[in-house]
Length: 308
Image (tube, rainbow, N blue to C red; front, side, top):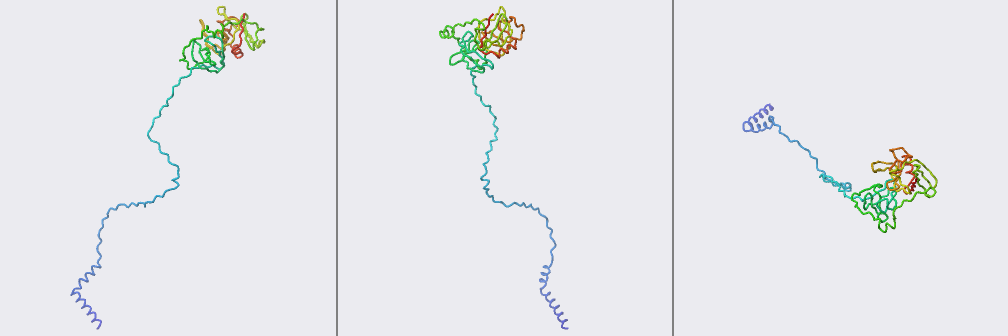
């Protein structure tokens, strides 16, 4: 009974509350429990996030500070190479004696002038003038002369022409009387270490060492119209090869030539083999092997005794 009364009382209170204004309270509570419908959210463009490393403080490297300095690079501008300037120098006029030869030095430009000296193989000398086919040089501080056809030359194109010494000067007369060819001698009268004897009658040549003959060969001397001169002479120049010319002939590369008087010489031949008979323009012709032997045996200054 009591329980029924309490229930009835609660219902009455509820009814009165609703009637006098509890409705807003109840509605507010109901709103608080309501779940709102989902709202559509449109996607937005999102810029990518770039992660940058945090700056790191630079720490000086003491080792790098002590390293070798870096070379400064050269400019990149291209520079064209230049050709070095060569100074023009004038060659000193000179002569030189070829290997294997010995050359007479004379007091004047000709074989009629006396010999004042001798140039051995390889000797060089400065040229100061010229006269015809002869070169003027300084020899022991005095003017002297060498034949142009017995030496090699260099830079002589501008060498001036000079006058030859006069044969009438007192000095020349005192030191060089007119050249006289000594008469030939018999072997017993000749006292030379080495000398050459030529017999025109026998057309033979004999090489002597003292009074002992060491080598003999047949030769061909001058014809009647171009005789070989007689007398005592000395070899004044030697050539392994030389060109020879005269009236009506020219011969190139004549072998083993030894001149003993002006243009007269002993030499080998290749244009005839008629030895033992006169054949030449005045020279003494030898078989080439014999001429080679004699060329190696004799020196400049060797006596040549020519007789009939």
